[in-house]
Every structure is written in structure tokens, then in C-alpha cells.
Image (cartoon, rainbow, N blue to C red):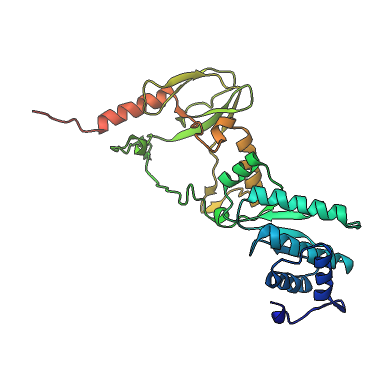
Amino acid sequence: MLEDLKNRMLDGVDFWALVGKKRISQGWSNTNEGELAAFVAYAIAFPEGFLALVDTYDTLESGVPNFLAVSLALLELGYKPKGIRLDSGDLSYLSIETRKMFMEVNNKVSSDFDFSKLTIVASNDINEKVLISLNDQGHEIDAFGIGTNLVTCQAQPALGMVFKLVEIKKRPCIKLSQTVAKMTIPGCKNAYRFYGSDGKAILDFMQPSHHKDPKPGTKYLCRHPTDMSKRAYVTPSKVTPLLKPVWKDGKAIDTPSFAETRQFALEQLTKLRQDMVRLHNPTGYKVSVSEDLYESTQELWLSSAPVKEIS
């Protein structure tokens, strides 16, 4: 409330009184005064960085008008307001209506400052689904404040990883399981990415490490690691090796910077088909094995699995 406002002065001017005049002149006399007092205190403390959270009481009936009243007063003293933040409600609708209010003030007030360009920031548990929904609906949001979903991936909050032996003293070994997906593919292998003529990745291809690297323009039989019915001939236009040593003799090798890693990841995403990276029901990416690797896996699988005796 006003009585809690210990300092009303900014650059020798009674800033509260100046804000009050701007408020009345624009017909915003019914806004929440406690919120207005908070905005005034914030603006006095940070006159060059005034960006207000406007949804404490009522975004359109109080928050945005109070922000604009303080902004008009700041402009009179030579300061430029930054914008507002929305943290609840219908972000699409509120951002569009807020932008309309900015434009209305821009048309009513004689000033070199462009109110229509004020920044609208949105927060409130922003995630991929919310962003896609907002883009579908249309909005006037300039920036998003993402916290919880930035530090924790709710779709994959933990990454389960297990190291399993595939070769001992150059002898392939296999780990069997009732769950086929947990079965290992035996032996030391190399992996490659096959690209089509459109530049998009077709699949990843594994073969024994002692085999020669696959070459573009050559036809290869690509098999599903465990399903004998799934196979296809693929003639890649481009082949990229995927395995690269990152640790040798207790030391990291050619460790890329964070910026380089990020750029690499973004580039790889552009090389995947759109149906593979869509949010809903994405097409699974295929990992195949060579004919030799498929046959050696099947042979070791059958020789390692016990045969049931039924009587």
C-alpha cells in the first residue's frame, strides 16, 4: 500500500504523484493501488530496467494499466521502460490484448518512444507442448522464461545407462535376456550413419570393426538386430563414421567446448526427417547391422541359450 512506500522521490521529483497524474489522465483510476505502489518502488530502485510482473491481481484491468502509468512517468524523466511479464492465465490471449493496450497508448501519447515495441515475457511452467500450442494459437510474446523444464526434462528425467561386455580377449560375448531389447550385440563394432540423396539420415549401420568402412554409392543389406523379417538394401549417398575416441591413457582427447557441442547437436537435428523430430508420435530412427554381424549374433545367441527339455 501507499503507506508502505518509504521513498517517493526519483531524480528530485515526487514520482508517486507523477505516476498518479499519468494514471488519472489515462482513465485508469480503478487499478489496485497496492500493486501500483509496488511498481513505483520497483521503478525508483531500477528506473533503467523496469519490467513488471503484471498478473498479481488482474492482468488487463490492473497490472498492465499500472505498468503503463509508471512507464509514462519514467519517460517524462528520461527513462525507458522495458516491458511486462505474464506468469499465469491464457498466455496467448493476454499477450495479444496487452499488445493492443500498448498500441492504444502509443496512438494516444505524443512521444518518440514506441510503446508497441515493449517486451512481453511469458513464464509459468513453459515446456515444448506449451510453446507449440502458443505458436498454433498465435501470440505476442517476445521472450520466454523457462526454469523447471530447462533444468529437468520431464519426458526423460533420468538417463539409464549400463556398461555390458561384448568382447573378452577378442572373443565376442553376449548377454541374453527375457526382454530382447536388453540383449547385447556381440563383438567389437564400428558404427556409421547413412545419408540419402536429400541429405537426411536414413539409418545407423553397425558392422564388425575389422571390416572395411562402407562407401557411398555401394548397396548394403541392412538388417534389424533381432527381427529376421526386417531388412532392406540401402545405397547411401554419404557415409559418416560415428565412433571417435574421447578418452585414451587416462586423458580426454579433443574435448569440444560447450558451444561447439551445442552447435553440433543443432546441425544433427537438421539432418533428421521432420517426422522423426515431431513432438507427437515421432517415427522411430532405425539402427541396423550388417549381414555378417546379424549372422554372428544369431549364432552366438543360439549357442549360448540353454535348450529346454520337455517330457
